[in-house]
Amino acid sequence: MTTGIALAVYALSLLAGAIAVWRRPVAAVYLWIVGVAVHNAVGAALYGAGVRGSALTAIQAWKEILLAVALARVATGALRVRELPFRPGIVDAMAVAYGALVCVYAVIPQHTLGGSADGHAVGLALKHDLIPVAAYFVGRSLVVRREELVRLAWTIVGAAAVVAALGLIDVYAISISWWRTSAVVPYFNKHLGYDYHGTGNLPENFIYNVGGDKPFLRRLVSVFLSPLATAYMLTVALLLATALWRRVRLLAAACVLVAAGLLFTFSRSSLIALAAGLVVLGFAQRRWWPVLAAAVTIGVSVAWVHVFPEIAPTGRFTIADLAYQHAQSEKHPGVSFNPASTNESSFRSHLTSLRDGARTVIHHPQGYGLGNAGQTASRTGTPIKAGESNYTEMGAEMGILGSILWTAWVAALFVALVQRALRTNWWAAVAVASAFGAALVLAVQTDVIGDPWMGYVLWSLAGLVLATEVVRDPRVGTPTDAGRRSDPASGRKKKARSAPGLPAGS
Image (cartoon, rainbow, N blue to C red; front, side):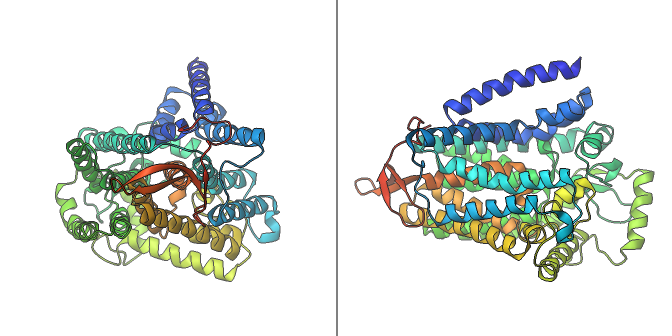
């Protein structure tokens, strides 16, 4: 009964969303901003309500379905007028080359490459690797007015503030015992396939283990059910907010809340990425204050390592947790739990994984095939050939060529965004360039696109920023819409026409 009701509500909601996206494809970006943020929380709630198996999988495919609708709408318009909605440039060519290589590796038999991923793992990896490409081309194919980018930015900042507020309430008001007995544990384990061994079999990063039998520290996970995914969204929101500068009081209040949430995720890599994004912001705006803000961010991140253990909510391990902890300590002697130590368990794990992944790519340059790396291998029980870093994961799956193409594409996209920001001083170009730079730093030691919010939202925003040319109006000295299309590689312009078949500003 519950499953039937859930599917009926889902079908009606999806139909409404698909119609909205078909009429205005940019609506998909709004839906991803909010929907992907609550995706896991809703999934766990539905699992707890009795919606299981293929029914829950179908419901959770909403984001891919809306992506397909947006792409179909753009393609239909292009076919109608027999013209692409944008003039292809080098960034687009690299995206196509990378996407084509992904598709080729999806059909190469695993045994010829030495891989062991099954069809399910290959399918998950195909989706994982191609989502940024598809989201980028959705954004690249649309023309939006400046006001639309302002609304998108405010939607991200507002959603991030709500996510941070809910997370702060959770860590202080909801006990870890409730989480241990919630549907989150079987949702991750039985539905998604992850084999977690955190307290009560929650994901390990739900808490920060200070070592021994001492109480652990709670980390902010919010509706993402992940401190890292939450931290990535909050980092992007802060970088967009620093370039927005509209409704300053409201913006400042939101930023304080978002910054507090980011600190309580205790994601040190996200704070480093935020500092890197601020440096990009300063370079793009030709101002020094973002660089000073980056230095302050690094200082705060160092101080927070010592402050957080004193003020963070705590919890205690169960007897089963302690038995597992002691067994792990015997297997990995000498590991420190001091967050300020270079031998700290998390830092050491990331460094080891990055080093091992690089060795894998060098010693197996042809790759093992899709599904043999990262989260995909983890959730399907496939031996993990590389993890943590997007750069080494692509190499482990698609060889050195795959790693080079992925790196070249995202680097070229970043350069194109920075060039747009330098040429126009348009706040949206500046903000998205800084956020994208932060994402590339995060991708060194984590699977950034494995967080769907980043893959869908940030890459579609990058395409949107490159889609419409904005020039400086000499009369007022501020960026204005030029109403023209541009090639991000050459800067050539042609008279704007909406993406074929789409209304201007859609």
